[in-house]
Image (cartoon, one colour):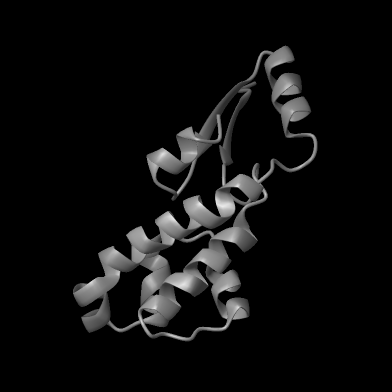
Length: 119
């Protein structure tokens, strides 16, 4: 039996979804877009390539989508990252998998810099 497991980092292992939504809300506001946090929260878990088209036009994506994505990342790291915590029992889960001879892999739509800071 294969004992391999793949876990998403943000929102599965780390309780970060609300903080990412708050960072998106601020980033959108800086670009003059008022988007209700509830709508943003519903889209969290998607990469920016899938999230942005929900809220802005193709023209806006071409004009400032990359900048908006980078802005959200900076806001998240500056204002919210220090508040992110793992969900309860994550360490115990990984230990149990290892003790049973299993292997784990991590996946994320977040950029590498954000993920490496969780270590």
